[in-house]
Length: 539
Image (cartoon, rainbow, N blue to C red; front, side, top):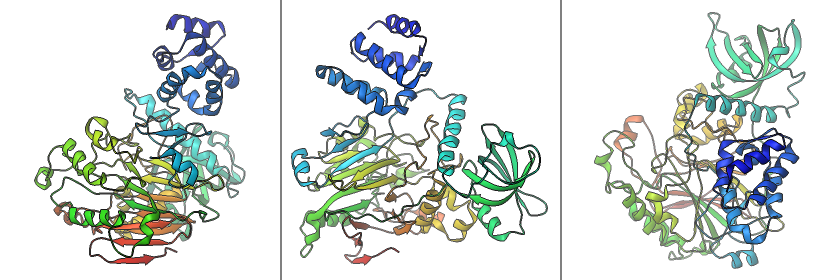
């Protein structure tokens, strides 16, 4: 395809094409007329002077409408084009496209799924791999996007009256509100808390008086780089806060499916470790395959979530090689795949990465690397996502299904060790408290120091849509709870307590699997540590 012809076409119509998009179109294999049609229709519908990859993402529905008008014989090239533009997720398994842009339904047997309505999995959002060279400007765009996205959420809060931009503050005013990102936090000599808050127009100091203990306690929970709202009085120099508004996550109902199915939540297998509890995991496989007497419910188990660290990896901490049974990462994936292969094929296994799984440590994290994890990709009933991911399960023609947010939880230790309340509660052993904190802030790792950040322009660590279920791992502590009607689940470990965990004071749980009934919402904890099984109903 001729790049010069595409550029000439754009210039004649008074707009420009980003180099990245030009390269994608040039390598797409599409004919020049189809490319011109796509570009022209997107420009006409958005009126933007510069056509960028992000513009395509922001106008997904319009893009899909345009693509649907192109000849059917071009569909294979179009699918590749959508993947390169970041509009679709490439999955090396059978999938069917829904009418919703960018959403895929996965099923091991599509025909059976469509007839029964059971076992349906949709990947709503996940992390695509990006090898772009990072620049300082990428971080600027990243934080700007975070501010704007969470500002949209906060603007719907009626507590923020007379909302103004920071640069609009001049003379002393009463009853005003601002929204901004926290860039600094300190305590004055008078024991008041002083915050530096920024928006796109400027900075301001926000003071929280220690004589207001309720507000001060609220302010203690503030982390750097989070986006919050403040109400109070003041001028261009300082705002005296009377209230702090968190973006928060709230569901107004706990939905129930018309079909009785079960979802199970696992993670932190750490296969390849000398301490991997293989016999316990084999007991679980026997159970799920119906080999344990008096367990009729197993036939209704349709979803298994593996929330990261399915292998123990290599080089993750000093002297890890002493703890390894298998010292090669590819061999670890092959070994864990042989176990997962034993699980019956009508169950969907939704697998996301963690920090031990050989992907980049920077978050968000893309899919498992096929170079090492090809054996996982070969599992017919495996559905791979990035970290974090938003997945919908159990939808039917008359039921929207459950939106499940999965996040491995690498940011958890940071918050457990810096937020005063979480420190008092020893939250690493009560991870549901950390999960509630993140839901309240609508971000999985807002503080720049909490994880290594990959500064994608669209901050994929924002909790943009409130989930029905939030699942995490990493702490090796089992916890099931509710926060504002959102079910929070933290999974236990399948690796015995390590000397490193002992030094850090971790108290892991072992071989416990929360099982969620989609119809009744009952939670049953399956315990394969000592063959005990018990019921648990979170409040």
